Image (cartoon, rainbow, N blue to C red; front, side, top):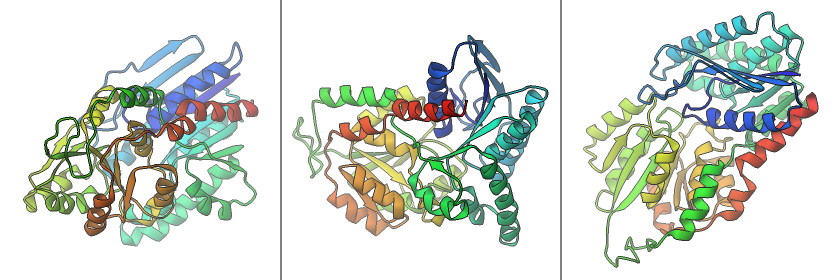
Length: 403
C-alpha cells in the first residue's frame, strides 16, 4: 500500500501544522502493514524569516520518504505566502505525476493544501482523507480588498465544496467548526481529532510541577522568597493579524507598567506594526524576542508567572481552539486569554486557573487579570485527555480504515 501526506509545514519547522503532521506520521508508521510506504511532501522550514532550522531536502528510511521543497523567503504577507504555495503546489504535482497511491492525506489550514490533495487523489484515482484546521472562507473578508471579497468567497467556496465532497473522510480540528460545515455538507460525515499536548510538554509538565519549589501568591509576592517582585507575563507564538497583539498589548502593558513585564517570543506579519504601536505609546515593559526551538521555549515557560493568549475580535476566530492553548495548559501556569464565543467556552469548561477576557478589550483584560490566581496548578486530567499521541493514534485508525 502506498500513502502520501501533503503538509505545507513539517518538522523541524515551528508551526501547529508541523507538530500535528509529525505526530500523525509517527502514528501511521506504527500501523501501516509491512511492505507499505508513506511519502511526505512538504517544504523546507519557512514559517518565520527570523528562524532557520537545518533539514534535508530528501530523507528516506525504511517505509518513509520525506521530500522538502525549498521556497523563497517571505515575510508572512498574503501575496508572498500565495506565491510560496504556488511553488509548492507546482512541485507537488511534478513529483506525484506518474505515481500511483492508495490514499492521499492532506492537512490544511488555508484550504489550498486540501484542494491540492483533492487534485492529486483524483489524478491517482486514490481515496482522499482531509484534515481541515481552519475555516478559510470566513477569513477572506479580512484578507481581501473590499471589491474582491464577493468574488473571492464565491471562488474559494467552489474549491472548498469540490475538495470536501471528494474526500472519503473529513476531519475537523475544532468542534466549533461544526456550525459552518454541517449545514453546508449535511450528507458528509465528519470526525473531530483536535490538536493536543505533545508528549514533550506532557512529560515535562508532570516533572516540573512536582519539582517546583516556589509559587506566586495573588499579591505578586514569591512565597518562597517572601519579597515582592515584578511579574513576568509571556506570550509565545505567531505575531499576525489573527493574534491582534497590536490591538491589546500596548494598552494592557501600559496599564500594568508598574507591576509586570511582558515578554513576546515569536514573529509574523504584524511584528513591525506591534513594535511601532509600542513605540508610539511609549511602552517600555514589553520585550520582543525571536522564535525559539520548543526545548528552549520550555525554559521560558518555566520562568514565566503568567502565560498570555489573544485572538483578534473577528468572527472567523470564534470557532477555533488555538494550538498554543494546549502547550500553555500543560505547564500548569496561570493563563490570561483574550478569546470569544466557542473558544471562550472551551477555555472556561476545560481549563482551570484561566482568566478569559473579551478580545481587544483592555478594561476586560485588567478586570479578569485581577481575578486570576497567580499560582501554579495541576491540569493532569486535561493533559491526559488531550495527549497528542493518543489523538493521533485514533486519527491513524480512521486512516487505516480507508485502506
